[in-house]
Length: 206
Image (cartoon, rainbow, N blue to C red; front, side, top):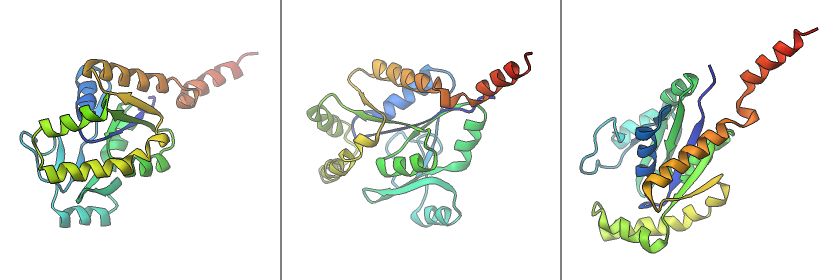
């Protein structure tokens, strides 16, 4: 069985990366969106095990000590981490795994899994981005300003990503993300088993 592709999706707060990744999993077969652990409080409508596994800080730090994360990082005062067991299980079954994580975590995963594809999601303009942040009414103005300051750091990582995905129209952004992943799945480096089968067949010819 061919191993699944690992794609890491990051982006500024308010760019709509969660909407894009959830749309991909809902509309296209063969994808699984990894569920991360976090110490932040649940937002309205979020459910344990669906959006995140919500942990206390002591519980999260215990998992760190047990080496249970593929990556983890602290972002705007909260921990976020990717449980590595579930990711590996899905990839081994040939399922394309999507990690929706911030830039620090993305770099850690890329260092461990160089074939991972990195996609950074942005809004069509910074004005649109700030409006989206305020319109969702889930955070105080102080928290919004903290996220804007964090964008300065995140911006410096964008050149390390493979693709920039502008989320202007959601359906179009979802379609383009699927195209990116399927195109990379056809790379020669991702098809070692097929090449081995061809080599074995040709080697048996007289």
